[in-house]
Amino acid sequence: MRWIRAAGRGLLVIAVILSGYVASGTRSDTVSGDGRGPLTLATAGDLTGYLGPLLEGWNRTHPGEKVTLVELPDSADETHAQMTTDLRSDSSRFDVLNIDVAWTSEFAAAGWIAPLRRDSFPLKSFLPPVVDTATYDGKLYAVPYVTNAGLLLYRKDVLAKEGIAPPRTWAELERAAKTIAPKYGLDGYAGQFLPYEGLTVNAAEAVYSAGGTILGDDGERVTVNSTAAREGIGFLARGVREGWIPKKALTYKEEESRQAFQDGRLLFLRNWPYAYVSASGEKSEVAGKVGAVQLPGADGPGTSVLGGSNLAVSSHARHPDSAARLLAYLTGEKVQRQVLTRGALPPVRAALYRDPGLIRKFPYLPTLRASVLAAAPRPKSPRYDQVSLAVQAAVHDAMAGNQSPDAAVRRLARELAAISR
Image 1 (tube, rainbow, N blue to C red):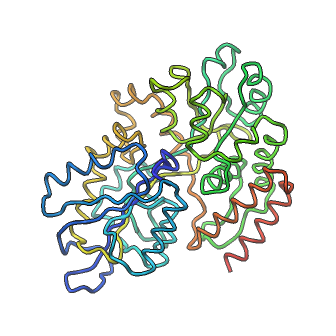
Image 2 (tube, helix red, strand yellow):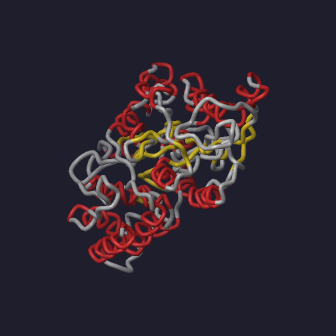
Image 3 (tube, one colour):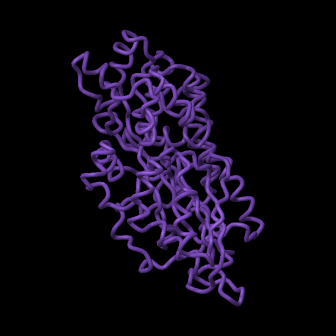
């Protein structure tokens, strides 16, 4: 997701696309080690400003392979539009792209990125679920760079005064949002509910956390017309209807929702880990008062959508050997540590989640690790952009009261069936 997606910002997700042309200029079946030279790395907006300084380390030690950073909009939807426009034109403008994990299937099916050799990367050192986001049709098409999972942030000072534990179920969340939040002049709960990619994430999490799915594993079979999906979408719609989700949350993306929580206006917030870091900072109105747990679900801890970004190799990289070397550099343990400490973005290296020093600085890491290990990817489809738009429209209409949750789910099933044909 943007580079907040993953982002950690949500949808924070840096996009790096490495491409593969051999020296003769013909496309190879996999990215090989031919050709060194300067590179251009395209990413969604780097909202924490960490990536430029990180790349300076590469540029100092690789003077003949310097990387030029190109920042696209921080909105995932706008970044996707600019990347796909460039890729459809067979342009070699970008050597390296950092793509949202949900785009891997789409880009691979379109032939925009080349398959990679599994034995070229330390995949066993990564958290297991993140590797699946980089595969399509049984092949590795990218390398995980940043992972992410949604967390429930909460005002631990308020819950402590009330003598209650943070919610594990929707019923517990709803009860506290309805009865406790108003006592403290707070809104109850918010997520990312504007009709954009963030709403697709929130909707998928609601469906998954009720035990449902949206598409089958093949990316074609429509599975959303289920009791579980109606329960999940109904939970979100009921929140707006009853007022414990404020109507203004229907305009929230990651940053708007983070700001509302950080300014002390929310009791509960679904967001990525970067929001915990920001809300715990010195300039936050709620510094020292923030807790984080796994997302609640229908009957217990819920299921987060797996966020983050993958590094892929473009079919038109000018210098594929340099691109592959940069990819290895960005996924090495030293740089992955900086991704966390400088960018507040969750790394893909499993060992970092057990590092005592990092846990002291980022106390949410054990919770995040559990969330990532239990997370599920967004629907895999070569037409993911159309799938996401359909989910956004149907769920937003249900939350805005324009359709009942049942009608919205049936409509979504029809639209997804048409997309999958």
